[in-house]
Amino acid sequence: MAARKADFGANHQPYKMSFTSGGLFLNESVIVAELHVAGEDWKVTLSRALEEGATSLPKAASNRRTLREIVNRLMTLTEDEIQFFISEPGRQEQQLSRCL
Image (cartoon, rainbow, N blue to C red):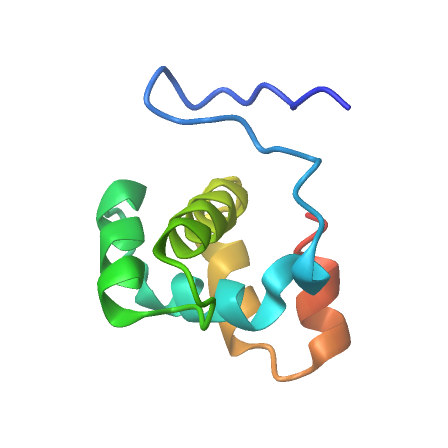
């Protein structure tokens, strides 16, 4: 399936619909969303997530790839959607917000 081209400019990769393994890495996505500072470049968030070990994957390459894909998904959300995603205690609601 082709990637959806978003209007993020040259520095951002489009959301890759093929990234569906790991139950969408919901727990890791919440951690990365919590690490993101509003208005901050997502590259900084990605670096922070790598430094803080936001995933428990055994290999560094897997960590980088997974976190990069999580950031690519999260960056498609608005700040309000990110706040809802990290503050919503219900797993079902968090999963639904990933579909926004």
